[in-house]
Length: 213
Ligand code: TYD
Image 1: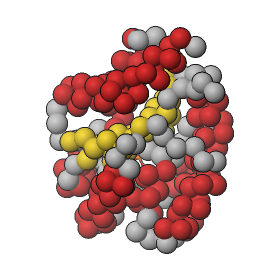
Image 2: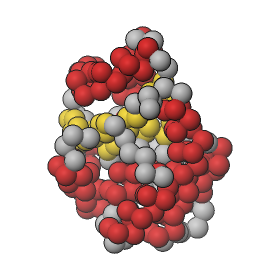
Image 3: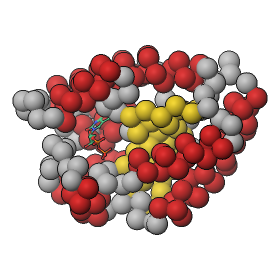
Image 4: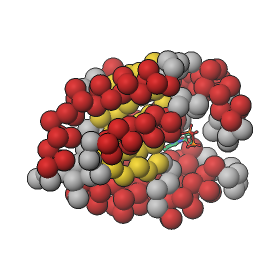
C-alpha cells in the first residue's frame, strides 16, 4: 500500500529541531510534496491539553504517570493526525516521537514497560527516518535558557541530560538504518543542507513516489 513518509526529529533540549523542521517542510513543499508538521506531546487538541498538563507544572507526576501521559498524547496524535496524513500519501514531520520516551523516561522505567506503552501508543507505527540532532547538553540547555523556554524537563540536572543524550546515541547505534545522527552544533544552514541530503539518499524513491500519488 502506498503511503507517505514519516520523519521524526529527536534530540536534547535546544537542539534546533523546530528550526530544522521548518527548513525541511519548506524544501518538501518546494518539491510539491504535501507535508504535515506535528509535535509531541501535542498535535491534536487533546494531546495539546495533555502537553499543558505535563509541561505546565500541574502537580508532580512520577515517571510512570509521565510515561502514560506522553503515551496518551501520542496515541491521539497517531490516530488523528499522523496515520491519516500518511494514508493520504503526505509526508509527516514530527518534533519528537517514541524515541523521546526511550531517552527521557527510559532511565526511570524498565525497558519492557517503556516498549509496551510505546506499542500501545503507536499502534506499531515506526518512523521511516529519525534525524537525531546531537549536541552536548550544556550547549543545548544554555540555548533553551536564552530562549526562555526552559520547562520542567529542562530544569532537570545536567547528568540527567547526559543520560538522555547517551540513550539517544545508543538508539542510533542499534538502528543505524532508521536513525541518522547529526551534529547539532553545526550552523543552521549547513545542518539544513545535510538533512535534505539524508532525506534524498534514504527516502528519495519513496518521496518521489509520494509526489506522483
Ligand atoms: P518541548 O518544549 O517540546 O521541548 P523541546 O523544545 O526541547 O522539544 O518539551 C517537550 C519536553 O518533553 C522535553 O523536555 C522532552 C520531554 N518529553 C519526554 O520526556 N518524553 C516524551 O515522550 C516526549 C515526547 C517528550
